[in-house]
Length: 400
Image 1: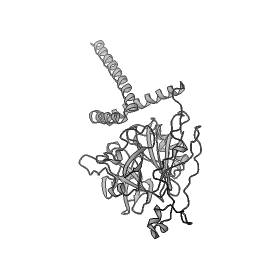
Image 2: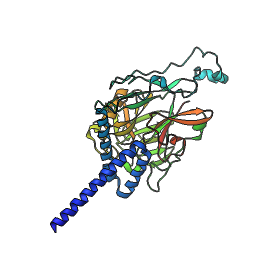
Image 3: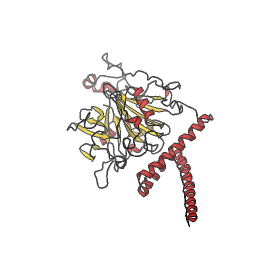
Image 4: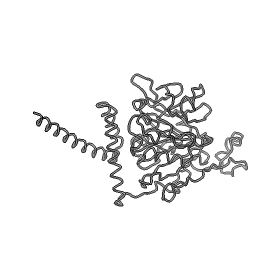
């Protein structure tokens, strides 16, 4: 009898192992080809078997995918390549002479003239190159990316090679001048929210869509089930804030602050929106010790920080003037932190992870019609998701 049970148990284990192997292989292929379908499949599995088993399966899949990429690199099949060149800078709007706010107010027609700009010009915004972390040409060099309606560069981008063990792993960095841009937050029509709880519209404000000021949009944080991190937009609290967790707060005067809720950021009637997500990655210009601890409870209770996958983050520079967005594949938490520190982030937090949810698009107005251009070529699924009703929360940027 004991021998029969043992054989049955062994057979069951072998079948489960075979199914797991097939599932892992299928998920690797699906993640590469159709990340949005892979994400939907993961959500279905979570409803059936719960968060923890799916997180374990995701960890297995991502680790197997990482091993495969490393083998391809070792065999010369995977080679590091810059995602863009300096010549690819996106001219979001037709360059025009720049004017001070005072001169435009005095003569509104002047902004469309071809006459030379007045003598009194706002100083050009520039960023110092980021110290190389890898060997690719162009790494750490900022190129103009987004421009104001008057042709001024108000966002730059660069890329970094933050992982010596994975030279093919690149992270894109976009830097916004907050003195010339404004950050907005939108609650999704489904997330983050609990069953029966408040939900957002999932839409960019009509005025910001129609007045020619919309520059870019990018992903928010985790779903509610992955940490119940707080979120609020214009007084609508989808989830209450949790003390001790990382938050980005948007104030009614346009200020942006990133810090620990309950310590660096306190409740205020002047806050128009806030979003929490996991713990601080960068705190007071240093990598948080929690990044090395790798606790699931710190990073959303899904996959651990050591697992290599798509990750995104948000950070502020030393004077709170520069807002940084980071995104890339093949990133662990320590690798992401290394890139953020190199770029000059003083306070920074994790945003969403995994291929389907990490998404950034520049917004262009072509003959009165808005279109979305992804920051990285692999951000190819539902490119215009933030120009429609989004089920997930997100941020967007406008210029004055």
